[in-house]
Image (cartoon, rainbow over all chains, first blue to last red; front, top):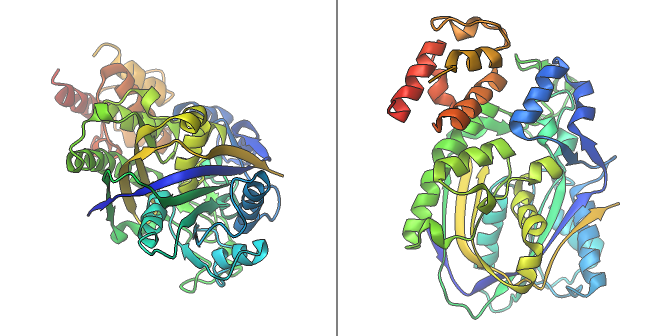
Length: 355
Length: 73
């Protein structure tokens, strides 16, 4: 479906990554494949380092650390937000919502709309749609859109298919009304029949965690993971992205009556460098207009990767100027979504380490 | 398409490869090899194949035909 919005802007972006860094070469010791084979994977996919939490760090820990940083630096007042949207697939608890945990821990006001959304790699866009819609209400002036995942804790270190690309991170985007009435075009599609491509089979009520769900199983290619762990059907996901994303961007630009040349940057979800290069090739986009360096530096943190791509690559530019940005997210659900919007100037645009 | 079979052989980590060899018979024909073939073909022949394009190709000859068809060569 096509969506349009107007009079909305992102006014600031903060990303938080764990200080703890692991390298692919360190991870290799846990894989059940010959080192030469793993090094080949590293080269093809573009793996190098990734940031993962050290110990039992939860989603709300990363977010509270980031919010306190914003309060301390004066970028945001403690009572400055009227809504807190938390997009995560790794909540602190099944209940209560992680947004309520964060609200309580930070001592935010009661006059507040807290909302959790269970979404992943398209979660920054899904969250923006919600934030934009909430701002229809005059009582809301600022929405804090939080994307956060600590998926390393649900990923088997012996699963070469998933572990080396996973990164943990949080982002906080402040969304508010703007004077600019230019249309913001977006689109969204979902296909629940392909929901098995990315899932954690156990831990919900359909299959509660038990000693049986903790048993490591071989996926047939020497990747060992339990039903308690993240499972990704890598080739199904790769195929999904190659087939669905280029037509989605074409449709978006058509709806916006814009051309590829009108877009300054294609800020896409970061599954890995290989897939992004393949997308850029298919769409005839020069690599420098489509950043693809987040996985090799920090890892794939699902819904956080679009904010990460922005703060890591465009910080200086967005603190002073603005760009025409084409955002796209694609993943769990399956869900795929894109948006064409003006980004910047931002009041803050920063990446900090969680210690 | 000079050196096509040599490049596929390299990915499969074998010294020689016949056009009609069944890819599934090679121990190294796994998801990583599929990605490597897609990357190699994109880089060398400017053709973008999908993983499911390759799923239908049983032999190296079939991949070569696929590339030829897509590139109009």
